[in-house]
Length: 115
Image 1 (cartoon, rainbow, N blue to C red):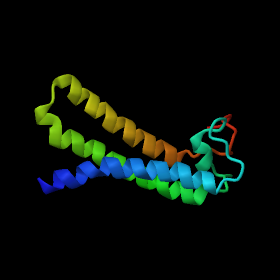
Image 2 (spheres, rainbow, N blue to C red):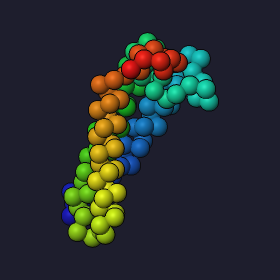
Image 3 (cartoon, rainbow, N blue to C red):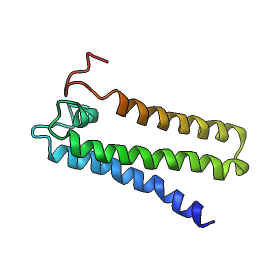
Protein backbone atom coordinates (compact mmCIF):
# COMPACT_ATOMS: atom_id res chain seq x y z
CA UNK A 1 0.00 0.00 0.00
CA UNK A 2 2.84 2.40 0.76
CA UNK A 3 4.26 1.92 -2.75
CA UNK A 4 0.93 3.05 -4.23
CA UNK A 5 1.02 6.26 -2.21
CA UNK A 6 4.60 7.07 -3.16
CA UNK A 7 4.08 6.32 -6.85
CA UNK A 8 0.85 8.31 -6.91
CA UNK A 9 2.87 11.36 -5.89
CA UNK A 10 5.04 10.90 -8.99
CA UNK A 11 2.30 12.46 -11.10
CA UNK A 12 2.35 15.59 -8.94
CA UNK A 13 6.15 15.67 -8.84
CA UNK A 14 6.31 15.24 -12.61
CA UNK A 15 3.92 18.15 -13.09
CA UNK A 16 6.07 20.32 -10.82
CA UNK A 17 9.14 19.47 -12.89
CA UNK A 18 7.23 20.48 -16.02
CA UNK A 19 6.48 23.88 -14.47
CA UNK A 20 10.15 24.18 -13.41
CA UNK A 21 11.13 23.38 -17.01
CA UNK A 22 9.01 26.26 -18.26
CA UNK A 23 9.83 28.75 -15.48
CA UNK A 24 13.59 28.21 -15.24
CA UNK A 25 13.94 27.70 -18.99
CA UNK A 26 12.26 31.07 -19.54
CA UNK A 27 14.55 32.76 -17.02
CA UNK A 28 17.68 31.54 -18.81
CA UNK A 29 16.37 32.32 -22.31
CA UNK A 30 16.63 36.05 -22.82
CA UNK A 31 13.84 37.32 -25.05
CA UNK A 32 11.74 34.16 -24.83
CA UNK A 33 8.08 34.92 -25.49
CA UNK A 34 5.71 32.16 -24.32
CA UNK A 35 2.89 33.63 -26.41
CA UNK A 36 4.72 33.33 -29.73
CA UNK A 37 7.30 30.57 -29.14
CA UNK A 38 6.85 26.88 -28.43
CA UNK A 39 7.92 25.48 -25.08
CA UNK A 40 10.20 23.11 -26.97
CA UNK A 41 12.27 26.19 -27.93
CA UNK A 42 13.57 26.12 -24.35
CA UNK A 43 15.37 22.83 -24.99
CA UNK A 44 16.30 23.39 -28.65
CA UNK A 45 19.92 22.63 -29.49
CA UNK A 46 20.67 26.33 -30.05
CA UNK A 47 18.76 27.51 -26.98
CA UNK A 48 20.65 29.33 -24.21
CA UNK A 49 18.41 27.60 -21.66
CA UNK A 50 18.90 24.08 -23.06
CA UNK A 51 20.95 22.66 -20.19
CA UNK A 52 18.69 23.72 -17.33
CA UNK A 53 15.42 23.13 -19.18
CA UNK A 54 16.57 19.71 -20.43
CA UNK A 55 17.25 18.48 -16.88
CA UNK A 56 13.77 19.47 -15.70
CA UNK A 57 12.19 18.09 -18.87
CA UNK A 58 13.94 14.75 -18.42
CA UNK A 59 12.85 14.52 -14.77
CA UNK A 60 9.30 15.43 -15.79
CA UNK A 61 9.33 12.63 -18.33
CA UNK A 62 10.71 10.02 -15.95
CA UNK A 63 8.21 10.81 -13.20
CA UNK A 64 5.19 10.95 -15.50
CA UNK A 65 6.06 7.67 -17.24
CA UNK A 66 6.48 5.91 -13.90
CA UNK A 67 3.20 7.39 -12.72
CA UNK A 68 1.30 6.39 -15.87
CA UNK A 69 2.57 2.80 -15.81
CA UNK A 70 1.95 2.48 -12.07
CA UNK A 71 -1.55 3.90 -12.42
CA UNK A 72 -2.35 1.24 -14.98
CA UNK A 73 -0.81 -1.61 -12.96
CA UNK A 74 -2.36 -0.71 -9.62
CA UNK A 75 -5.77 0.35 -10.90
CA UNK A 76 -6.62 -2.02 -13.75
CA UNK A 77 -8.65 -4.39 -11.59
CA UNK A 78 -10.95 -1.53 -10.56
CA UNK A 79 -11.46 0.00 -14.00
CA UNK A 80 -13.87 -0.60 -16.87
CA UNK A 81 -12.49 -1.73 -20.22
CA UNK A 82 -12.69 1.75 -21.76
CA UNK A 83 -10.76 3.28 -18.85
CA UNK A 84 -8.17 0.49 -19.07
CA UNK A 85 -7.75 1.29 -22.76
CA UNK A 86 -7.45 5.00 -21.98
CA UNK A 87 -4.87 4.23 -19.32
CA UNK A 88 -2.82 2.18 -21.78
CA UNK A 89 -3.01 4.96 -24.36
CA UNK A 90 -1.88 7.42 -21.67
CA UNK A 91 1.12 5.18 -20.89
CA UNK A 92 2.06 4.94 -24.57
CA UNK A 93 1.61 8.67 -25.08
CA UNK A 94 3.96 9.47 -22.19
CA UNK A 95 6.62 6.98 -23.30
CA UNK A 96 6.54 8.19 -26.91
CA UNK A 97 6.57 11.82 -25.80
CA UNK A 98 9.59 11.40 -23.53
CA UNK A 99 11.51 9.29 -26.05
CA UNK A 100 10.71 11.57 -28.99
CA UNK A 101 11.41 14.78 -27.11
CA UNK A 102 14.83 13.53 -25.99
CA UNK A 103 15.86 11.67 -29.15
CA UNK A 104 14.70 14.37 -31.59
CA UNK A 105 15.25 17.80 -29.99
CA UNK A 106 14.22 20.89 -31.89
CA UNK A 107 17.29 21.74 -34.00
CA UNK A 108 16.98 25.50 -33.86
CA UNK A 109 14.91 27.65 -31.53
CA UNK A 110 11.98 29.25 -33.30
CA UNK A 111 12.29 27.17 -36.49
CA UNK A 112 10.16 24.07 -36.97
CA UNK A 113 11.15 23.29 -40.56
CA UNK A 114 13.41 20.30 -39.87
CA UNK A 115 13.00 16.90 -38.26
